[in-house]
Length: 226
Image 1 (tube, rainbow, N blue to C red):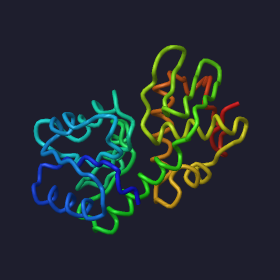
Image 2 (image 1 turned 30 degrees about the horizontal axis):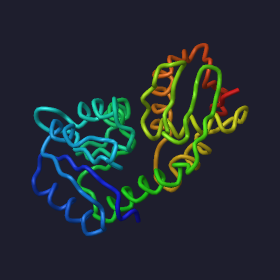
Image 3 (image 1 turned 90 degrees about the horizontal axis):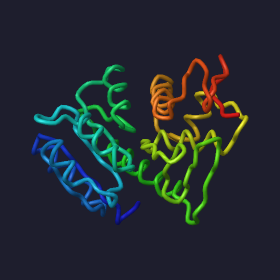
Image 4 (image 1 turned 30 degrees about the vertical axis):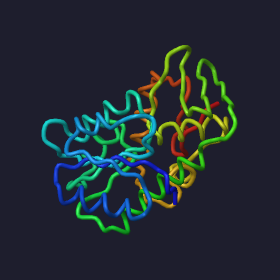
């Protein structure tokens, strides 16, 4: 457990804010709460390790807040939602989210998701400065940022980990199962979610899927970088 990790919770339901806040505070996390998306934006800064955003909030939805947060912040975003449909999940991933938790959820499940995201952030944060270069892409392992030429490409935590996985193992074809095991570890996630993250990653890199320059498709097998 990361006792010093900072988590922002945004939900328009006071009861949920209080329950989640008490639960995470009791685990030793530093917690900041917001009643809507705009308040969540006011709390967003590089010191935040994880965002937990309700999807349907008045004024500014969780999706809209996530899209704005993603412009400057890299930390994982976990959405809380009453809907479990694939279309809603696709919208969330497109907005910059990394994970979904459907209401009503158990306290144990929430804590497991939180711990998993914070653990991965810690494990994948290298101690020493280093870069991975590929064509016009520069992956900075210290700041966990990506540049295409001189342009900073803002990726979600999950998108960054997928790109890093491909660039560290050039030429290796990663199946959906390989990507799942490497990036999500023990968290359940479907092939559709993985494909959406890759689609969003390609879009941000301006990588035409019909003639990709970075992430290539091995039909029936998976994805790879040459």
